[in-house]
Length: 278
Image 1 (cartoon, rainbow, N blue to C red):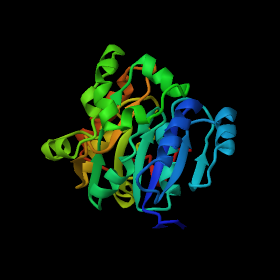
Image 2 (image 1 turned 90 degrees about the vertical axis):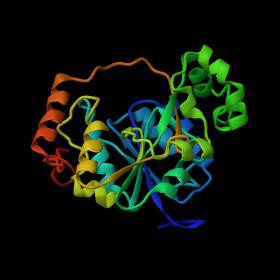
Image 3 (image 1 turned 60 degrees about the horizontal axis):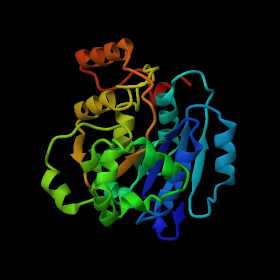
Image 4 (image 1 turned 120 degrees about the horizontal axis):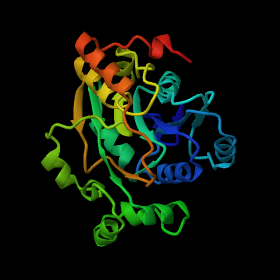
């Protein structure tokens, strides 16, 4: 499998659930990446007809896009992610959540710093309601954020809109160099890893059936325990998180599962890629 520039280097897994406007922004931004040597796997935790029609109608001429679905029966994101990992055609996998729009240099940054035994993780700017709405409705383009001059110019507007982690939206090689050795924990919506390293730990733990911990803290701990190094790519691999109300708190069950895993000192989960519950 190849592109105009040669062999595919990365598989981009986008976790989605019933949000076409955000998915459109993500795909449009992927069109504008500084590299195009990647495939896209849309990993849907559900079977939305709206999402299906959107993907069918979207111009896929520049991409190889796969759309994976599963029955909508509660939170089963980790099951969907494991299916996407198994489907990936490359050795390098990059994870994006369906409400996080990548900077134009996002893919290139993950590719630059990646390698076997390395998991790269960046951070995201959490946008406020007004700018998120303007992006979703097409009143402003993502270049409003990805252009560094425009971004610095509009930082006061971001503050007024109650954006969070505004510094995380600055693309800067100098800031990345300054902070690259600072320890950082894996963020599930913005990380990349070698496929073999994910298979080694049996992927995501499918016992997590509600949001939180299972998509980042758990996989972070198990990757490190297996010998993988977490590499900080903040200020290089940047995302813009679209505002939506927080709808969950981490469940007691998730916390207990995570503690049990740590106490067992085992980095391979029982229910993952090789013993999928789907």
